[in-house]
Length: 292
Image (tube, rainbow, N blue to C red; front, top):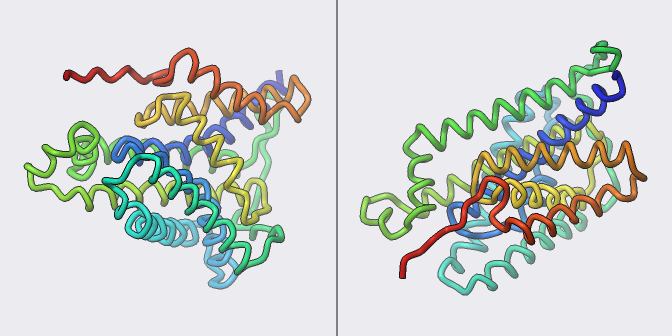
């Protein structure tokens, strides 16, 4: 029983990370219909922002987290402004290729400027262990799960109750009507990229604390798995990102516990293929019917 509880806690921790990053994918897709393949590298950039803030400015956890979120939001907005906005009316393939190019640029620019070696993430929290049903839980695990859930609920509130959230939903439904209502599409898109990038930075710092090694290519595998989580739940849906993230976290942890660890990544991508074959809209998604 204690082993099951331990794996359950690990799954909640990993699922929280995937869900936070998946929210960025699903928000951008919901507003622009774009798969931002550079999002995993914004997660990586957020981890490095947190690293240098903590090391150079000697700040504690909360200021480090907030400042890294701000810098990642600025980075996400800059990427949208420079790389995506000029191609907004271009063919969809052009945007996909550009997103892949931005991803490669961020990885190699980070490697060229900071080096490709792994770095130990600074200790921002004194980790303490507690007994729970025969299993061991740390205050870091609790922090990761709680922070992730709070941010997810806060995002849901923003999307459902605030003006900018209503504008995001309006853009998702009909961009042409939005212009007639006097709402700036550019402002909505900037807010979407900023919020999604800030959440990715939070995930980057939490990963740095939990698995205290970061490197320029850390966003590749995690970014793809978060994308799988978004597709699994229903890309474009906030609730779908949450459901997909936690499902993927549970599948990976329990698969690694029952099967050889080398199967872990393969199972994640097998889930993507199965979902696309059986229900392309994801678990919570519904087919979009257009009248012509």
